[in-house]
Image 1 (cartoon, rainbow, N blue to C red):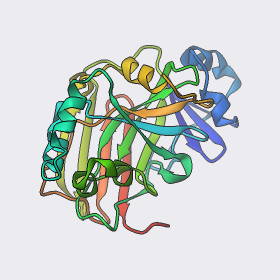
Image 2 (cartoon, helix red, strand yellow; image 1 turned 90 degrees about the vertical axis):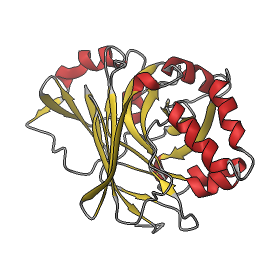
Image 3 (tube, helix red, strand yellow; image 1 turned 180 degrees about the vertical axis):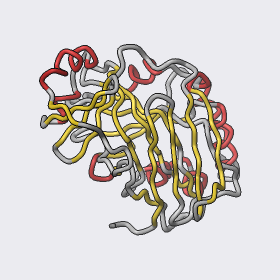
Length: 280
């Protein structure tokens, strides 16, 4: 079942049928056993003919925050060790990859996040910027995994590589996060062979593409969720990006007007255009 957010309207797609509902987003999604509860409520929703998947959608969030996990794939560890080597921080990431405690950091809130077809930003004070395609978990206020979406953790590798303590500036700034196009709610967890696919287009021409499966993650989703909720409360639930295993080569950097297309099997496609303008 897929939930799309468009202003105050919730669009629902399930088993080839489409519905709409005017409900408070926070209350609608922040429930345990969300799939079974939505299934029981389907008859109360208004049937519609179709959902236009080419239109822009709001990120599937209201009062939720976005957090992120780092160094959960071997490729991510390699890239971050390399970018921080000259600053003397390269060995930190190997230790994080092997450690019991994961790297978790705050990423964004709703007003700094864009949805499908929105414009993501690359920092004007950075010369090395990349998208990070990630599976994002929706966690209820009790910490249960209730859904999945696509996340783009846009990052400045030059700032992070200068000093690991600059991570918040490299990761958390206006429109550095994209989420969408929908919230996928399933009865069972996503299968391990679920693929994450990234393509970057420049003037409509692909300049980078790659894929990976979530089975290559070192850490389990439940493990990351448990660490995030260990000392923090989320009264409306939260999103947790689970890390990236797809990183463009070191000589690549995003440019304004690039299109970043992320597709995750079973969820759909999140497409965004890059910009350096802080307000658009």
